[in-house]
Image (cartoon, rainbow, N blue to C red):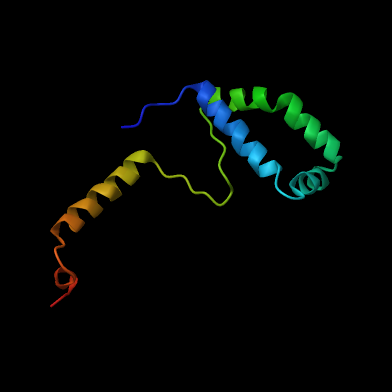
Length: 100
């Protein structure tokens, strides 16, 4: 089982994820337009408040992931992996996968 990361480590990952996402081409421009503010306001929010906000999220037990990502409970994934391993351990050749 992986070791749990500290809130500070998780906060650093949050900061990194947010900065990576907001530094893409025209990303801050699109964010500013959606928020109805200037690009400089978005930039100032990120530079002045991102680290503190990341710590708040981290201490609240939250993470930041891309919108395309999906989250699954670890016990569910562990169960799927166990079933997959058990089945794959029985497979010796392609013939093993054929149905009669």
